Image 1 (cartoon, one colour):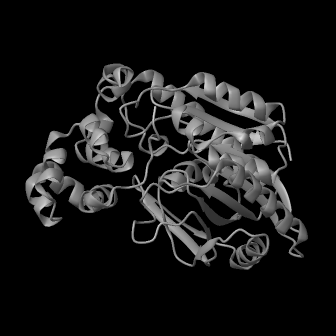
Image 2 (image 1 turned 30 degrees about the vertical axis):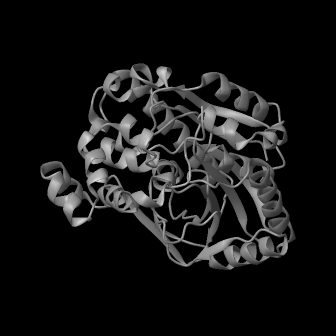
Length: 272
Length: 99
């Protein structure tokens, strides 16, 4: 069977790569996030993961309003994208991705697929630092992006996102492929980008989610509602819910939490 | 508080296209900064859409029903708000609490 050998979740803001010089405090906070992301990379390499399945959410960048998917799995051979002067070109894992696609359809998740994608900051911002931390000799994991719509209404319901993760775990467990898979969820935590609430960070909501995850009670968070997620700036937590479902709510270790001026930055590792 | 990241209103489709282009195309972003009127004309924006873009006012755009990501592309990336002091970017401190 394909084994889940690592599971991580992280914020994915553009600022992680753009690094605007707007205050010493913010620069220091971003450096802490970079360190945590490179630690994720180091752990992925140490676990000898050959494939990274990355749950991200588009913001009308990769996808457009001529065809906006709820769920989309990349099944192609090579994936790339440019953002903030960084260009990534990475191998996909079409065999494993195709098996996952068919398996999820069998489990009632009508996932779209694509053989070509241009990634944007939800993937590139964290992956740049994670892959930097993973750099060692010829280590080169394959990357399979998985879009979970969290940003453009109507969006996948939180419970459905969690159940999707559980189905992903089942498909991987039933696979005869020998892959060693690391899962990465990107997005959040509390922020209100582009709205009049920009600059608000609901630290209480962040702490609530973090404590549940640390306690191994991520399954309780599947009961959150769309309204709650928007109200507390936690709308991108859907990708984390998918990961929580995939690891059966394994307890989280928080590698860093930074309450920055515009977002609660969090990088977490899950004890799989 | 209402749903913040709602369904994109079809009447602003051209404005959404402009926002996405500003995000994806650095050259167009630069042209927009220098001459927003001609770029808006290229994208065929309506007078209502042009007024919203000219305002460079994220709150006004949000209240009109523009997608927050389009607002981010136009105001933060297009008009360069992302590189301004934090106090200028923190709308919540200025207006959010009164919404």
